[in-house]
Length: 412
Image (tube, rainbow, N blue to C red; front, side):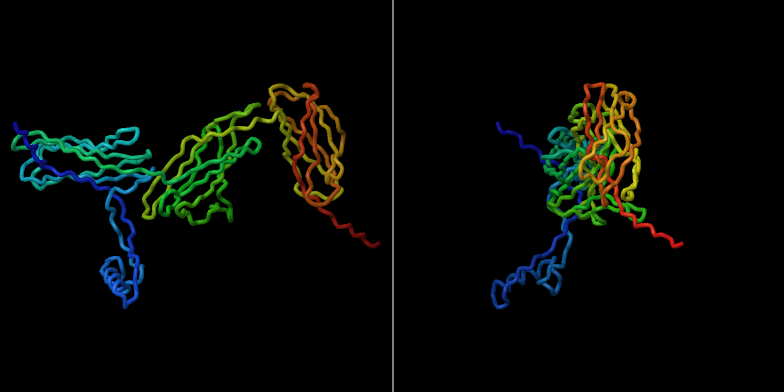
């Protein structure tokens, strides 16, 4: 028994990626004029439409070239496709329904599904445009299905075609955290992983709810902010650009111990290709390790920038109790030999009890004995409520000590 021969499809299904063209130029390969090979190369180059007329040895004649395939798509770009269904036969196709799906490594997306057309006459066509923002890496498959019924025979037909394309990573983003007291410095390295130049449109850091971010990639000049990278945001292939941000916790996120895997925010990067095609990627939540809060913190809240040699001056210190219990502190004004600034006043004074989480201000006097940029002498606090526990502070601040000219005696 012979098998029945399947009927040929009435419809043709074509898919084309909508993308901007690429630059194409002729590379001159010439030889000696008396050599047969050189004459042949010159003739072939003169027939190339990309080479400039009457100047075959120059490569300045760039033309636009349409892509021959789906090509490579980068993560964060938008895939635009053109779907065309054409009736190539002399019969009428009824109830023509077109369905387009995109199969990614982890999901199946429906891109096009419309009510069936009542009929598609011979030589008629239907065209649709689809768009999808690519959010996954790896191989993608575009599944296009056209179902219809042959008007002459009433037979139901199903036409299905597959188109595959790859999605690559456009950027390599690496992060590094550095702790400075309660603040966190975030260094972000952005590397262009594409084979062509890209223009970094915006690079921003979106902090999480518990942090405040300060962009350290701009400088203020003449009441305006200018990027440290200049006006040129062009990033060549394989080149790296480093961005820096300062993160400050808004609440009591830190404790007396180290806190790991704290979500601090995410990066948002928008770039454009050579022809202005836009792409965008967002990193996942970046996680950092917070250093422990100091049990006792001393900061200088008021201090002169410049003082005179051998003339006493005052500074205001703020003492904060970061421990879980009250403190009763005794301040010890330490004196080191060779120090440029010495404490003056009473040492060993016992202050009032400082509750947990509380702060107090204290005014101390100092005497500069050496000129130049000098650091404050070390300061020691002893907690008399917790077995005489000691807290040393060696880097409180600096002032510049200048030498005053001698006063001129007025003649009588």
